[in-house]
Length: 249
Image 1 (cartoon, rainbow, N blue to C red):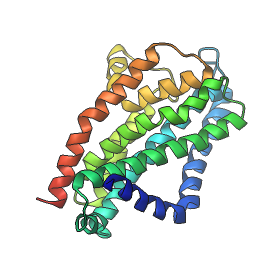
Image 2 (cartoon, rainbow, N blue to C red):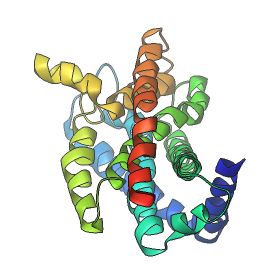
Image 3 (cartoon, rainbow, N blue to C red):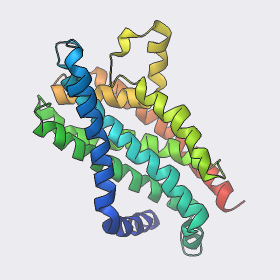
Image 4 (cartoon, rainbow, N blue to C red):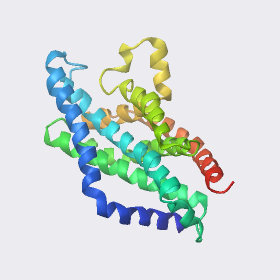
């Protein structure tokens, strides 16, 4: 299958740079966890019966997965498209634009799961995981990984300058991250903001990761997963269409 061949190509590259990739995605969340959890956390009262570091730790897993998928399908895909001309070379063989997009999305989703699992391991070692349900988190991360990969790919399909990704990071990813429930409960925000959080993919990822890490499983988690799935289903044809315009038309 052509999609798997595209994925295999990306994995061959990843084998050469895996240490640098993993260390970057390991150190940054660890710094946030240390500074916010141990530093700020010493001045913050318990939230929902949890110490502050225990409250934010699962959110670090979700956010690490989000950033991994987002950066891979923005900067990574853009470089393959505009500078390395990798996508154009692939099109010279028996590969379609849909295969290229699907291969990139699959690779970004894999990295999302991998880096999320790295942070999950860290918070487990630090004693911030209460339940064996946390073992399902890496599997679940495939869904937000897919969603954020598609969002990033759509933006890559409409931008012609690598500097424009600063807008995507600053105006979308950062606000989505800050108001996702990672650092404080969404129910502490105004009513309109709580409603708006439902269109924020990382909010749903944080809610599921936190529930699984703490063992608070309930049918509501399926709703969060369903929202992510709907977003992904809507975005897939759009991502293919936009990238087709970049590569074919």
